[in-house]
Amino acid sequence: MIPGAMFTDRGSVRVRWPLALAISLVTLASVASRAHGQSCKSDDECDDLDPCTTDTCPDGTCVFTPVPGCCNTAADCNDSDPCTADSCVSNACVHTPIVGCCVSAADCDDGDPCTVDACAGNLCTHTAPDSDGDGVPDCRDQCPNTPAGETVDSNGCSCSQLDDDQDGVNNCNDLCPGTPAGETVDTNGCPPAAAPQPICDPTQNYYISLLLSLGYCAPGCGVGCPIVIISTICGLMSLRAGLRRRRRPGNRRR
Image (cartoon, rainbow, N blue to C red; front, side, top):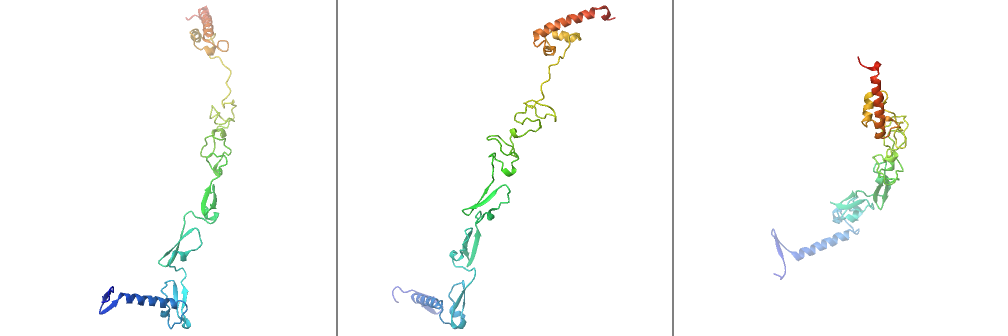
């Protein structure tokens, strides 16, 4: 036995590994030589061991025709599209779209009428213009030009831009919301204050005079009795007048 030699049994044939390797190298060299247009007698003699070529022997010369879409590595699948990930799977090219990638603005249409769609650096952007900066896009903002810092509703309107009861005073300043249509209001959105009206006439009613004498109904005495002291004096005088009338012969009860 030659030192360092390796043998294996295959049936009744004993093959020496160094010899088998040499034979394989010769075979590959032969295939490579045929790959360069060498003469041939049959298609089998033109097999270049490349799954991506169709090997034929027309007119005694090997012809290797590329198989469309076939690949050996991902480099064979480059489609020059920045928005696909190119790979080679089982000798077939696969081009997987990259989510969010774009080539033009048309690739970025999100179907939202409120956004401006653009493509920058192969990435889609969707911007919703908001001119007054109130957080509601212009296309849905029913109250443009909202003053800075004011809180708005879902329609983009602040209280200074609304007048729910249509009285001419905005909701922020309206102290009397719900004013009936057509009524005149003051700067606070309220009907003007009516002139004070006496609610008690001490010359006509004995019991009201009694209340006045005790200090009640002070506002009811009118402009002449704005405070309790005056109304009390007014009431005492009225009570006296009332008692005199009751003592007259014609007013006595029978």
